[in-house]
Length: 440
Image 1 (cartoon, rainbow, N blue to C red):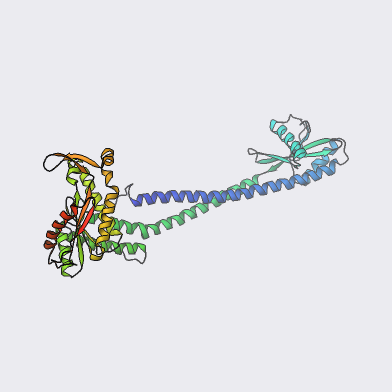
Image 2: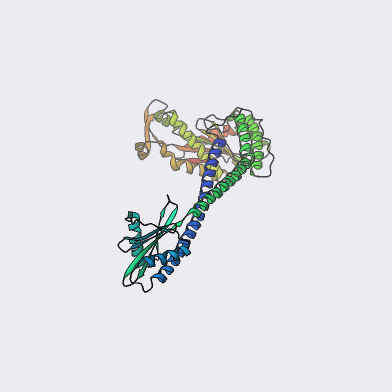
């Protein structure tokens, strides 16, 4: 039974998709909610403004040429406001004293003191009218589901009365409830679409990747005959084809590279010999480059075999980089062991290859020495005769043998000549290469 691991791509994809879905739904719903809420708020403000203007007009008409407000005037105001649908209102003087108060079109006989909220509303309405030319000021009482409009009205000589009119916001609450229901429905629809997308993603991408993963695991266990049965006309299908081709190639390489060098991973002696013999039998004009590191033993004696292995790997990389620059699949690189590498190239590329290898090797070989030795340009170590001597920084010598000048029947003959050319190359100071040009 398949178990979902936290490190698996299915788990990571699922978590990522869930987070993306939550963010997407939240953002989308929030945008709709905010947009509709703005419309509701704007409509409420417009309605309040319209109501305030109408109240202001009615009050101006009633208080025109009035020097004071008596009981008759208050009754007239009540009738006009009732006509506008205002059932509850309070009249305030400039000093916030209550002149009259009506609730559901009935006067409240007992005069009370204004609340702090009312005092603040009266003062702010007068200030906003005087300095900002605002018709009204408003605040909200959620407990009563009303919006309180404070409308200042001037009359007489520098006199002001403030009308506090309460507007019901039940309609706003109904709109809000409707808006919330809308947002929930939209969120459910978005989640449903994401679920469909997730299923499509699972079938088209995740499942094929899991199949490829299982096949890869089988290959890692040594089952190079593993194949994937994915037939599609897209990138996943191309990946499956490439995967199957890779497994075939791996099977062939396993047979060819059983003698590969364990350190560098390059083909070993058997593969090198087979490659040279095959090229000679095919009549190809080739050059075989044999390498040898100068002063490598002295380096190993001082710095140890682990650092020596690092130098071997660095040398391998120099050979590979030099070969890459030609983009020629006819170039073959092998590792006989120790510091001995072999490169088989078309004869026309032998010199360029040698120059590339020596240049790359010399460029950064000092990285394997400590600061003092690198600065001095030599190390103190023990020679093969057991004597303490100074050895220069390592260089590389390349012996080149080719069938361009004379015929070779097998790799054995080439190796014999290469051994002679190594001695010639080593006599040249620094990194160097020597080509055997003898006709016999």
